[in-house]
Image 1 (cartoon, rainbow, N blue to C red):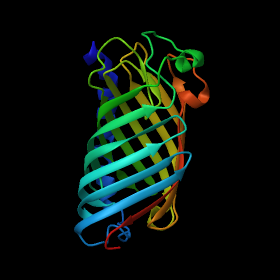
Image 2: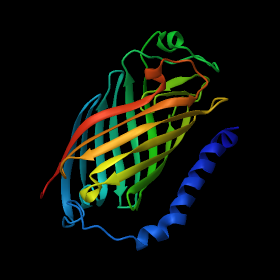
Image 3: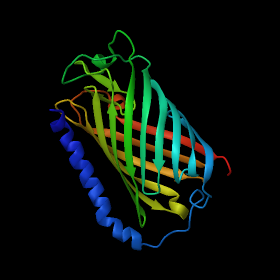
Image 4: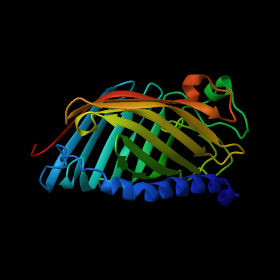
Length: 271
């Protein structure tokens, strides 16, 4: 049954990455822009950090070798605090210009939501009724690809979460992905498409689509706008809002949606 549940995720991921291969030739013949700030940096051992604030608070520490924020391999630790939960953990990361891979462990603590009983439909009231707030650990794996075309950036991604020790019949609201799923597995396939313009693709506006394989009878899909503005090589504002297209639950728009709006500052040793 788990194999059947994951089939839509595998199919969508295969289509996304096949599209990348089909259009890669046109991307290679397109005129290459001048190197950006991080691409032009020398390879080195570095320590780098990211801090962000807005709809959530975010902090990230990277220790590795390569060009910071461009092509490098090393350790990443991060912490995210939202209005509903706090989470973070360590991970290993391979970051390349056209693909990055992250494998790590995460601890998540909800402020008030607890474990849910087995059911195929939940409402706001059922989501917020609990005996104790949930805290859980997970293994997270994520692969992101990037295809820069003339005035267009395509970025498909595949995300898998595994919660050890959560195999007993229950449901859980996953605070990072903001969906209700049947532990221990949660999968997601996403496609980000952004129109770009300006020097070094400074302005980006487009859409983000998300498909979640939750282990329940019905998958969850969301779609909505996304944008980013690179104010400087160190400062960026980014955001997205994905609204549910199909879902087995009747939650309010905030709990059923994915959303982020943050101003991020990044810096690396040797800048």
